[in-house]
Length: 458
Image (tube, rainbow, N blue to C red):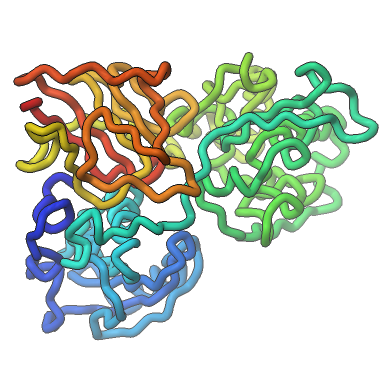
């Protein structure tokens, strides 16, 4: 857990780090099968994966390296460990004696928080930081690439289009779960550059071969419904990543602009998620009344007609030979978002929480989001509906163009670049009761937790 790494990755002065675990830092180990060097395009940094243990052989390592990051290939070297510059930490994923592996992250100390989040939140591993990561100050106040929060974008309709529903304007939630008005395209009324800061984007084409004799092409009912599903998708922020025209370098896997039968670019897993047969509620959703009538609480794809969308998805799954029972057993998308809101904190390590003088201390480096929550309250997830959980006493954030917060600030302090979200009226948060337990949650950025634990008020 993150809180177990306090000595090596917090506000203290301990010099512990990756080298303190012989199972992680073992350059003389004769059992190395191979290493794979590649670029983490999200972090824009070099990484190296080490394959160890009886579960690996040169062939399986070569296969994994051929699609090591977003199906992109790395450079494999058999029989030796990683040797990369500027190491900032090691992520142990799985059992190293079997088919587990070690990911070595590189960069300067400002990348420590991101490496920890990538390891423990997204890869499900345990992060062992380099000693250079041992303080908030060392983790970089000049971090770039921050997530831009939700906003409302109101514009005049395009020439030739009807007046909008908001006093003639078209108003759109600029968030990955947002949608513009039905019949319009999100790219015309929302800023996709902002949306792409909220979820990782990468270009990956999914070529499809369309048989001109495919019976679907002559099925007017099927093609009409498929066109409607496309219109639903293109009214949503999904097209900021899933079209060629709305992305910087091409669609990411599924693509509504791939032709009449674009649905063939959608995998079985993604199709089941579209219809809500696998859970994706952890991604977050608006009340339809606040999202131009689009509902994403029951289906993965926002829709103005949930039964109609589900009927089409069921029809398409059946055509692919997949029953609803089978669809419901397919793996959920991005389970880490569901895990955020289901997380149950444990006691903080010594020195983490709030000091007698009211100073907040956390691990993992600088942060853009901080919460103090009642014991028994919820755990924060992603906006628009999971980011202010029940029981929140105090919540702060900083804008994407401001430096993140460093541990050592005071409870109730709101600096010039900070935005207090709770209490909403700007009043001071309630005083903490000595001896009572509270929940401190800190995120490097949205969906990137670095400290989540229970402390006792002094």
